[in-house]
Length: 120
Image (cartoon, rainbow, N blue to C red; front, side):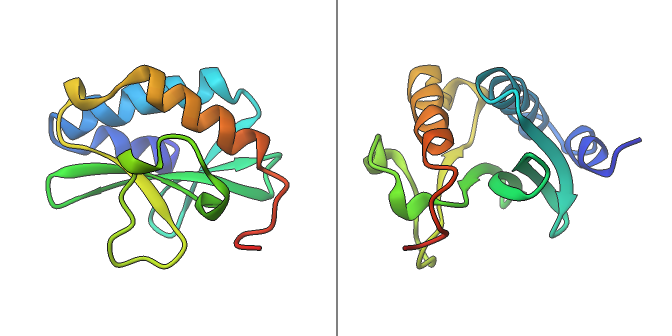
């Protein structure tokens, strides 16, 4: 089994349900994104080279982190950046916390910005 898929399936509920939902939405909105296992978490890459976003379970929540978050402008008030200089994430405690409109708009914007440098 793919290590990234194994990471998702081995998580307890409700994190597993959140991760599976995020996986489906990411792959529907950004079909070019490929899920790999990097840095011990599922990490999506565009064309296998360009980091796009990652899924991380920790302390009872799931973070959907964005690689080029410094350039994002939509729904930034809903993003978490505590303790990080450049990365931002959407954080979910329950499946019902996911606002699919916010999620799809942030994913779409991140995809449009995929060719921007990490921070500049």
